[in-house]
Image (cartoon, rainbow, N blue to C red; front, side, top):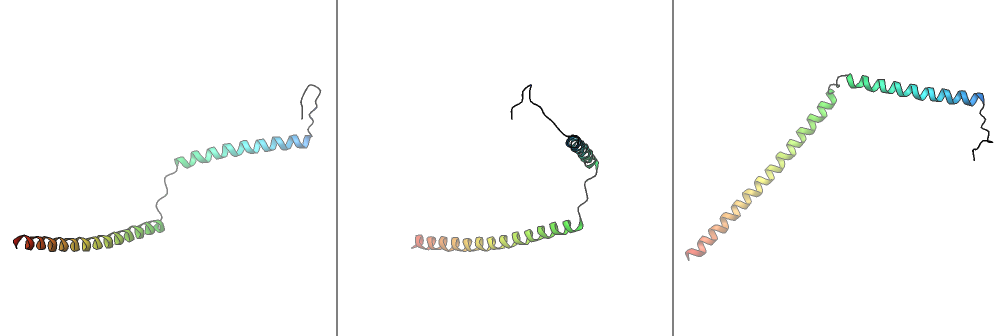
Amino acid sequence: MEINKESKFTISIETGISIVVTIAMVVGMWYSLKAEIEEAKELPEPPVSRMEYDLKDQMIRNSIVNTESKVEKLEEKVDDIKEDTKAITQTLIDMNSK
């Protein structure tokens, strides 16, 4: 498509009205959206729902139980290491005393 002085651009009245109505709708939605955003900024934060609180509480409790279980296993391993260390130390003492 080439536009110059001799080119003609025709548009029907219906198409022109459609374009104007579409532009008006877009501008209206834009300002409506901006107003809703400003209103949302002024609203207080919603309180935590009971269901959300219960789910978070349960998640924390599960985490504590898992951590407790892992700590118990680590304590058992530390006790085993202490016993092994005592046995090695005793063996070394016995070897040096002979």
